[in-house]
Length: 395
Image (cartoon, rainbow, N blue to C red):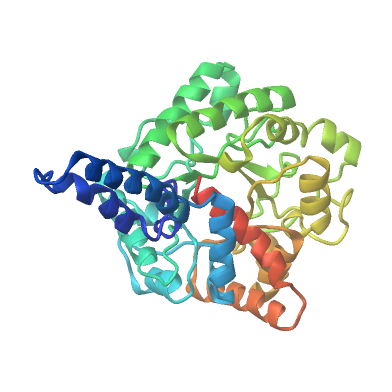
């Protein structure tokens, strides 16, 4: 699982363990004088710090060393979270992990049958990743929001919609529900949940309601419940798409509001949570809707103004930024997948969700690679995201 210390952190771990343990397995000599025994003990105590120092490096040093030896293909792969259509390893996901070196997988009902089957599937996927030249663990993700958006509904605990929880206004119920969800996900080898939704809406069952302070308070409890169970949370859909009645799965739309209105309402719960929660356990998912008050031309998911200036600059977020699925109609009707790959990374995203088809995933990867090769995108920009991802995986 990604939450464990990956194998590449301690390359000589087994050797160092043997060197420490060997003296304990040898019977003490009865013929050596006591002073010789004391000399041996002194030598051992002098060597141990050197061994420990060479074996255990600070996390940031490990990350720097790893990124320095990764190929461009390995780095680009870490930016992708991909979906596939099978309940077991198939050629599609095998190729994505071992040929394209993707760093993450998202699961849907099409991949899930029982807790035992999902646990075996995630174990098999992690095994594939461990066989790569750089054995970096996968990030295994899911949308387990509650209400209508519950994967493998008949095999997991009942999780009410956020609308129902918001109407109750019971913070402890929100925490308990998400803690239970987190425990179930950990049991199945899943370490990132793309929830809670912070969009403000009186009618959307995925929303806690229209009150930005309530959304922030209940969202905080949802995140804390997931985090306490060992799962990273994702607040979405930044900067808040509750004002739109158009589903971005099918079509784009624009949010007609000025910056002051957005920041006092829609963006408020994101801002407050970013101020108080651990950014290594908190992702931000950016929507595909347009916000002309900030960027007249680009959807939020590929807008440097919204991601770099607003989210990272003004709000001070330094964790992982993830796109909504790039195979949604709000963007794939208007951009090629190659363009989306380049534009999403250029805008400041760290993770790109490409949730369905092999060809789309390959095109996104190719678009990023070609952008680097033609100097439209710097490898240093990719390194920046890879380091954030590795920092999370080594937490």
